[in-house]
Image (cartoon, rainbow, N blue to C red; front, side, top):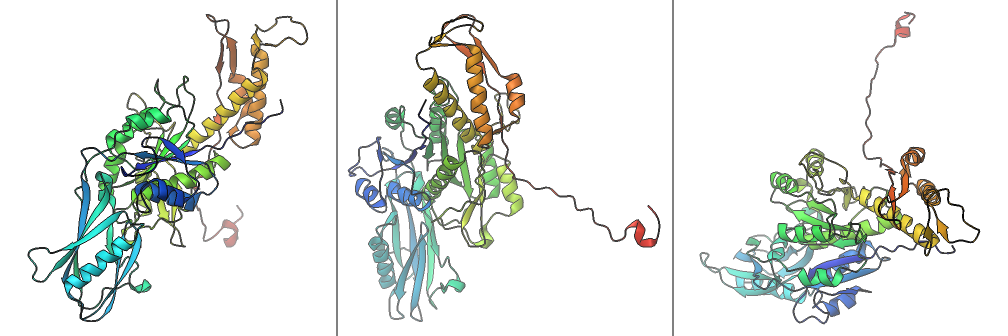
Length: 489
C-alpha cells in the first residue's frame, strides 16, 4: 500500500553499426554520453553516434538504449560528388553543408581545381562527425576539372538521404561562392539494401522500450516494427504481452505529391512519421532521434498534452522558400503524416504528432489512433490500472458479489474491483488524462467469467481527454448597429 507506480519510459535508438564496433550487434545497451556512443559504435560519424547526439540535444534526463544493426549483407554504399568546374578568380571561402553540418574551405585565386578539390576532401575527412568520407579524382567532360568523390560510411539506402548543399546560410550569413568559382554537385545516390531485424527483435522482445527512434522508412522495415509494436496477437499492445510503446521516424519525399502518396500507403497506429522537406539539410536519422527525444520527455511529463510547438534542437530546417505552406501541411497530416514547421527563431518545431493510422480493418476512414497522445494516454492509464490491481490484490481469492466471508480474508469481489477502478479513474481525471467519469462509471462492467472462476472480465470505457488543436472563430463584424440610426431594435 505504500508504493506508487514508477515510470521512466525508456527510449531505444535503432541504427546501423559498423562491423568493427565494440558494442555487440543486435543487442541494446544503455548509453550515458555521446562519447560513450562514439567509442562503442564505430566513431563520431556513425549513424548511431549521430542519433545519440541528436537525442541528447533534446532529452538529457531519460534512460536511453542504442541498438546496433549490421549493415545490409548485400548492400551498396551511397555516393555523391562535388566537381570543381572552374577556379576562383578572387580568393574567398567555400561553404558546404553535408548532412546539415557546415564546412568552410579557404579558396585562393591561385588554386587550381585539383587544389580546391583536395582542400575540400581534406576538410571532409578531418571532420569526424560527418557520415561520409572523401577522395579526389577527375571527371571526364570538363577540361581541368577535379572532383571530390563522397562516400557514405555504411551500406544501405539510408545513405541516399545525406544532403550536399552549398551556401545554405546565403548572403545574410556571409555564405557566397568565391567569385569565378563554379561547381557541380551530384546528390548522394546509389545506396541500396535494408537491414535484417530478426536478431534485434529477438533480443529486445522482453525489454521495456516505450519510445523508439527508427530511421528506416522502407516498407519492409516499417512493417516489421509495426508488427512488433502493434495490436496483433504477437505485438506489444496485445493482451498477451501488454508492454506498449510506439515508434518515431522521419521521412523525406521527393515533393509534396510524393509525400501525400507515401502517407496514404501506411496505416500503422503505433508509428509516427515526421515528414520533412526535400531540401532539409539534417538527415532523417537525426530528425527521427530528435523527435523521439523531445516526444519521450514531453509524454512522460504529461501523456495527454499535445506536442505542438516543441522545438527539435540541433535539426537544420529547410530554407524558407523550400518549406511546405500551411495548406500543404494540413493536407499532409490529413494523410497520416506528422508535421513540422519553422518558428520565428529559425528552429524546427512540431505541429502535430500524427500516426499513420487512417483506416479501420474494412478500409473505412477512422481516427481512433490518429494521434500519438492517444497511445501515450492509454499506456499510462493501463499501467496505473495494472499497478493498482496487482499491488492491492496480489494473492487474493475471487468470490461473487454478496459472498459472506470473515474479516481478514484475502478475498476480492467484482464490486470491490470496480470500486478500485473508479478510484483510479478519479485520479486519472484529476491528472487530466480522462473526462466524463460519471458516464464511464455508468458503463463500467466488472464480472466473473462464466466459464473460468479465476478470471474477471472488465469493460473499461474511459473518455480520453482531448487537446486544443483548432481555434475556430466566425467574426461577424458590423459597420452600423440599429441604434446608430435612431431606430429602436
